[in-house]
Amino acid sequence: MNRGVFFLVVVLLFIFSCRSSKDISKEIKIEKLSPKALQEALQQNDYDYQSFSARLKIRYKTKEKSQSFTANLRMIKDSIIWANFTSLMGIEVGRVLIQKDSVFILDRMDKVYYERHYDFIEEYLPYRLSLKQVQDILLGKFSFEIQDKAKSKIRNKQHILSFQEDDLSIEIQIEPEHFRFQEVYLEDNLVKRSARFIFDDYVTSDSIDFSSERNIFFSGDKPLETEIKFSRIKWNEPVDFPFFVGSKYEKK
Picture 1 (cartoon, rainbow, N blue to C red):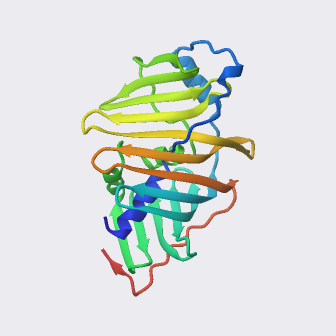
Picture 2: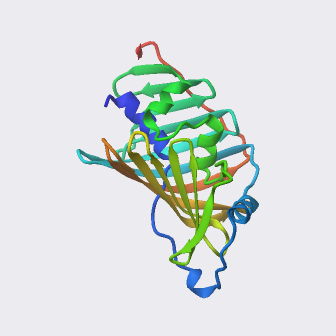
Picture 3: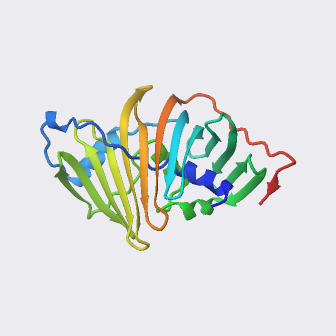
């Protein structure tokens, strides 16, 4: 995988998250709820925003290698996702800018610049996602369309909501006290690959409950995992998206 595409993959991995959450369910009584009731409970935790920024620590691991980065993430709702990546040595190695119809990648190490259509992102996701859906999942927001044939049950003292969307099987594990995401599992039945995400360490920032620790486990031809820790979380403050391409960069 070339370095520029690797930067894009790291950004997309922000979408996916895993680590076990504290088991508070032992302390409360859990009653089975209908799929509609669970969806409504999840939507009560929804929130509106105009901009978002945060600092991230990222560990990326495949069979071949393991790498760690820090990153700055900035977003404008329904418009832009921007991130830069810094090595543990403190050297910026790349930037990514994603808009509704375009993807831009700046590889500072190899002095290479990539410009692609937004569809390019779909090559690195187990599921087709719009810019809005990418942003929602980065923020831990609920954006799935619940179908009439959805099912609900209680398993290991957690609410389980499962449904099918085209060739994708979706299962959501919901902690029963605050009705927040604990785990989301996606399985593409057509190409036989899956992604498992769990949200942990919820913090309250500007009255918004936000999962500040995330991991992902991808299975398939190229299994990988990543861990992400959010800090310096800010909502609705001015943000900019510097993306200057110098004359020494080669466009590919």
